[in-house]
Amino acid sequence: MLGAKRLHSSHWGAFRAELSDGGMTVLPFENDHDPAPMLANIAAAKDHPARLSRPLVRRGWLEDGPGPDDRRGSDAYVEMDWEDALDLTARELVRLGALAGLPESGPLPGAHVFGGSYGWSSAGRFHHAQSQVHRFLNVAFGGYVASVDTYSSAAGAVILDLVCQDSIRYIGESRAWSRIRDHAELLIAFGGLPVRNMLVNPGGSVEHMARGDLRAAAERGCRIVSVSPLADDTDADLPGVTRIAPRPGTDIAMMLGMAQHLNARGLVDHAWLDRHTHGWEPFRAYLAGETDGCAKTPEWAAEICGVPAATIRELAESAASSRTHIAVSFALQRARNGEQPVWMGLVLSCMLGQLMPPGGGFSYGLASGGNLGRPPLGVALPTFPQG
Image 1: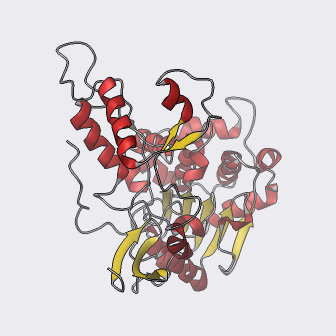
Image 2: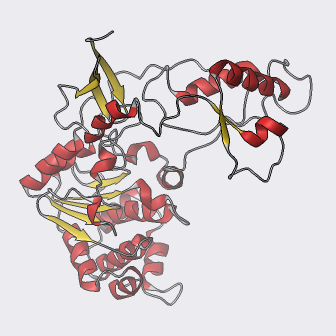
Image 3: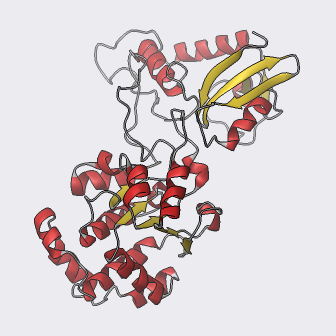
């Protein structure tokens, strides 16, 4: 309806949209004090030349049918109207066994159909594409091949489940932002604190809080250390940020150098380790080089990560003398052996004896999404039955 302001949501936050003869006007939700600038792209996306306005079918498939084709990846696409495209799709699904009924024996129903891709295409529940695909495949084939975990965070989540049996507790660490805002004296962010990530949420944010809490912490006197090769992985306007730029993929070496320095200087909270953890002695022997002949000193770490040994020592000592929160981003686990820096971030927090105090502790993925580090909702989100 022209002139009516519709309240809607997106991955970038809530907004009101108004249609007029001149196009669409998008206004951020009035209760969001830090709306994402990406909302400004919504109006232009409606008629953007990059948007696909009609179904497209690969020419080779259209001409020759299904099967291997060396043109895949370089073939042209043919525009079709919706009715023809739906007929083509329906015939292909029937060819693959849709609506054929459950088999009396053999593979499980839908064992030849992959429906496990996870995606962000809609922030809503009814229009959540993955839910609709699952519902459709359950009806059409009686099942499908699903997936386990996600490339966004799985390596870190799985290792946390193994070593502390509670990855959910540390993914984003519920209420972390408010506790950092009010209590933290030092925030060490491995992977940085990129604003662009904090503005985005798979389900849509009504209010963006992270940047305001981070600024309040900095203005209160909390020292913020961004450990990332990218200078823009922390808000340029944030006061008093220390930026440390290791070589990509070497955060684990820097963490080990910090750990060995803590141990060498007698800054490890052994009473806390004895009471709450298991396995310190073999790890200590590894740090000291007793198991492999290579002590993980700050100098050793500096050769690998490119961060001066003096910087590594200073950061370790500051962590021991402050209420310290160690955050490890999802980005660090998207690599070979990606579980290691996540595990090591938790180990550092344990060595400091600071896993539990408000504002201290450890979090995984804190700045990797706008929904992380926030208090949980009082009620569960509604879900759409998937059959």
